Structure formats: structure tokens, C-alpha cells
Length: 274
Image (cartoon, rainbow, N blue to C red):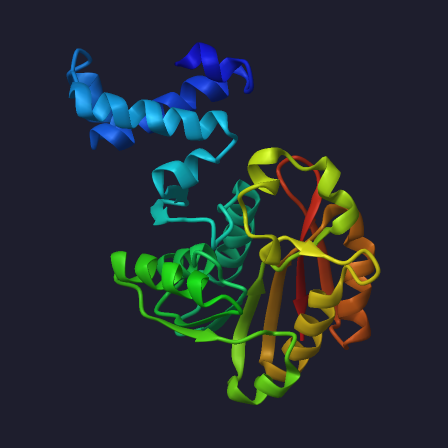
């Protein structure tokens, strides 16, 4: 099984995916398997395991094959209606949590929530926050709602397109606004791996080449209207457009705009303060 995957993926990644598949199909945790390494899963589950392997060989992400993805200390439901949470987004969440760990009862809005990974992690890390999340996709909101219910986190989920300014009156005032919006330019499709390009939702990924910062302009304008005193907005960005994205927030009247590197030294995050 690993040999077949190695023809497509690096060896370490192949081994890891097979382990993830095995534990998922067998319905066991890794720690439990270490106590019984000779465990057999039977013919029925073996067939299911090979079927799922074929999905991997077709470049389907292992998270979609198993229906689960790790984010912070959570295991979230994922499917092709939502992006698979990335480690860079965990860094964005940590930045927010570190900035606001001493505060209580903050009103937080997540724009384009997808699986709900950001808003749910903040719901666990912040002190009694009041959480709202919006997304244009009803399917994504359903997935996020399932994840919120799993962890007992109360979130006001709303089906709203942030680009539709006519809907902004439906929103309240917030202390924090966070977003990981679409930012991959259409011309960057050729740089993407098949497992992303063929399976993850394009609506949540791509923006036109002639207007790649359309979501950031909307978010900055919205945030300037809807953030309270000392409010902050945090966004994940396209590393190639950091300077241009910073300028958008300056142009919308934000006085303190910080462009932050991730652990790989790439400029992937912005914090803007009212």
C-alpha cells in the first residue's frame, strides 16, 4: 500500500497517510494500536481500506477521505464544501489568542468561516467570547454547525456574502474581526497541487487576477464601520501581496497595521487596529 503511494507522494507523507487511513477505518486511536500492534481489522474493513487508498491514489486529500481534519486540539468534520484547515491558520489564531488572553467577553466575527476552524478555536482559547461567523456557502455553514455542536461551542452562524454591502446592516459591532478569505489568483492555479485544485472548493480559494484584493477591500471597509473602540481585524493573506494588502487597511483609516511572518518566514498575516 505504501509502495503505491510512494509513486506519487514522498515516503514520509505516504506512511503518514496510510496510518491515518488505518486508524480511521479501524475506528481506533494511535495510542490504542500501540498496545495491540497485531490487531486485525477483518476482510470487510480491509476492502474499505483499499477503496480509500484508491481515493488517495486519485489525489483526493486524506482529510476528505476520512472526513476529518485536525486543527489546534480539535478534530473537525471536513468535506469538499470547506477548505482543509492549514497550519498557517493555526498561527493566525494563536496571534489573536496571545493578544487577547487577558480580556473577557469579546465579540468576535469570523468572515468566511468554512469548517469553523478559526471561530471554534477562538471559542476555546478566549475568555467567554461572543461568537458570530458568516459564509456565502450554506453547505459550509452546515459543516461548521456540526463542528460547533461537537465541541459545545455556541456560534451565531449566518449565510452572508461579505461582498454584498446591502447585508452589512444585518451585522452588529464587534471587538475582533478575523478572516481567511479567498486570495489565490487565477494565474496561480498552475502552481497548485492536484489534491487542492481538484477537490477543495474554488469559491473559497480563487480571486480574479484583475482584482485579487477584492475581499480585503470589503473586509477593511466593513471593519472600519463595524469595529468598536480599540477593535482589531486579523486576516490571512497572499504572501505575494503583503504590501498591497497593508495599503488597503491604511487607506481605510487603520492607524496601526502589522504585517507578520509565519514560521517559514513568509508574510502571511495582518493585524490592523482602529
